[in-house]
View (cartoon, rainbow, N blue to C red):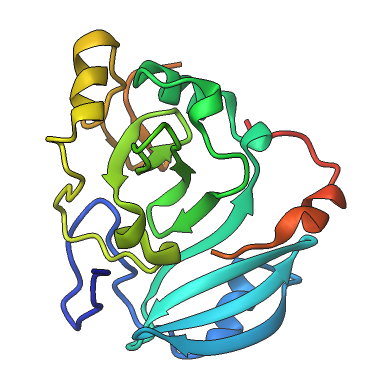
Length: 211
């Protein structure tokens, strides 16, 4: 079951914005200059604002109290940063175990992250990863709920999963919880260097992979 937003603002790594947004349109304009608002909707207890920004459709997700949780948009596997792909490999998985289409770039009050959909047999978690490739959360697909997940500070992924235990025993793992948040640089420092847009949207883009 997906987490339900509440009036309590969790003090966690993926905590939502502390202050309420007085004007959603102005917030969009300030955060994503030049963006055009396409739609606004209430869904499952959240406010969602769909925008087009720099040629890409993005979804801003807010609590009903107008606190910004995150912005998400799709990124194909071959557009993921090299550090993120390396982090998946350090977790004992292959490049081919990353879903080609169902990955997300995630902006939130703490910075930029990547929601990477893993697909290996019956093992299908979502890894929330930093730009540096650290796995900072593992989330069940249902809990992620197309980006509507609220972080309560707990890792709800079933660590007793046979597949994950198998990987633990036979492969080196990434730094799931090692390191610390770098306030100055705005990223998780581990010491190492829902919206279905479809294929057409990405075929029109010619940018380089994010680094």
